[in-house]
Image (tube, rainbow, N blue to C red; front, side, top):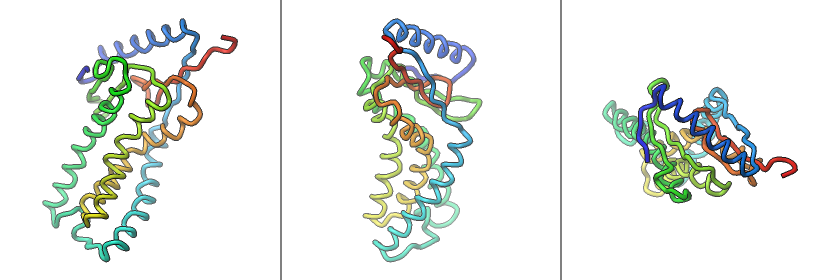
Length: 213
């Protein structure tokens, strides 16, 4: 496992490592293709997702529990409540990336040795990168994890235990997985490919058998 703060040297290393993988897969009879995710589209999808998930989740909470107190929408009243909520959400951004790595390492030959965690100062965002090409099922497993554990499960638990904090946290956790959901939706086209978390583009590479091979 590597933990790093991205800089020019690390970006060049990533490019070289990716090229080495492309060359290795080429020798095995596979060609590399890139599936890019538009950041603008992902942001727009996130807004739509927020509206849809909120429109479904809060009415269900109301039907099950009888009321929603707007003052407790973040779980606690006042400014302190908002600070606690958004502090927890900021922490979850890092947890999101850890979940990717934690799940992917189970599917990798080198386990944690194939996982990179880092922080990109240019975008002020953490990231996780898996350095092995994975099958559809293995890639899906690591991609869906954060949306499941930070989105769906908190929403369900919040409704069951009457916690608006968990429900609201889950809504934002679900929306935080908008890019992952776009990736997962696109995976249906590449079920028979080897999938590789792209190290410096927003998206992934998929390796398909060369025609005639």
